[in-house]
Image (cartoon, rainbow, N blue to C red; front, top):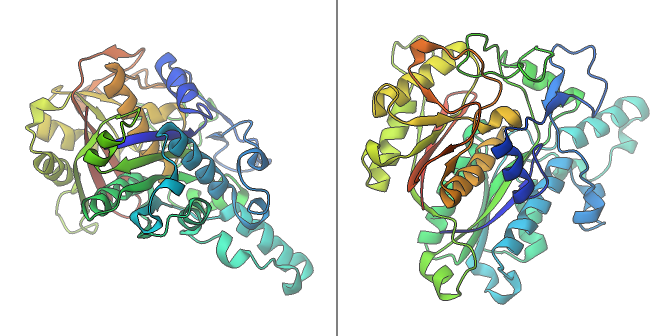
Length: 399
C-alpha cells in the first residue's frame, strides 16, 4: 500500500502544486537556465525552479552531494511527512530504501573534473568519490532517517521508477514495515546534456509548446528534465493498523522485460511486460481505466508503444495519457513522478491531459487524452516506462 507522496518537479515543488499544474495542462517546459545552452542542439528543458537545497537538506550534506540527491532527500522527507510516518518509531532494520537513478551526480562531477583540469588533482574534493555514484541518494536517505534494512538502487533509465517500486513491493512482502522508493534526476549541465544528446533522442525544437509532442505527426524527440517523486510503501495491514491518513492505492501488478537486440527480427518486449503485469495483478485488460504512457516522442518508439497498447487493449480500447509532456522526461524521476500522478488520478477520478500534441497520428489508434482532463471512475491504472538500452516496465496501481 502506498501511504505517502513527495514531489520536486518542474510542475511544482509539492504534490499539490504538481497536481494543480497537471490538471490545468500548464506546461513547465522552457529554455534551459542552469547554464548558457545557446550553442547546444537541445535548448528546452523542464527545470525545478526556486528549489533551495539549504532550506530542505541538512547543511553539512549539501556540499557533499549533487543536486539530484538534494531533490531526492527533499522529496523523501515530503513523502514521510505525508504518510505521517516517524522513522524513529519503527525498528531501524525493518525499514528500507530503494531508488532509481539514471545519470548519477553529473553536475557535481563536472565541477570536480573542471577543477582537475584547471588546478590539478589536489583540488578535486574527496566527496567526488561518492557524490556522483548512482546509490548516493539511497544512501543519504537511509542515513538521514535511520533506515538500516535492505537498501539499493536500480539503473534502468526511464523504467527505473517502476522497477524501484517493484523491488519495494518485494521487500515489504519479505517482511519490511516500510520502504522509501521512487527516483529523481538532475542532469541539466553541459556534461549531462552532452551525454543525453548521444542517444539521438533529444528534441532540438526551440518552441517549448511543441518541442515535446509524442504520438504527433511532428514528433521529433523528447525534452529532458529534472526532478521526480518519492513514495512510501507499507505492508497493507500495518498501514491500516496505524490508521495511515492516506492510502493512495496498492501496487497490484508489476513486470519487467528486456527488448531483443536490434536486427534479431524479434519484436519489442513492451507488450509482454503489459500482459505480465496484468496477470500479476489478476486483472483482465478491460478493468484498466487509463494508461500512463512512456511517450518517447521518437516516431518508431511511439509506434512500438502504440502497437503494444492496442495489442492488449484493442484499438482505441483504453484512454492513454502522458503528463510528462509538461515536465520533460525526467529519466529515473520520470516514471516515479508518473506513479504519483497516477495515484492522484485514482484518488480524484480524473485522467490528466497530454500537452503539446496538436496533430495525433491517426494510424496509431490511440484514445489520447488531450486538451483537458477527463473525468473517469478509475479503479485500476497502468503505468509504462521504457529505458534507453531496451528496458521495459509496467506497473498496475489499484484504488
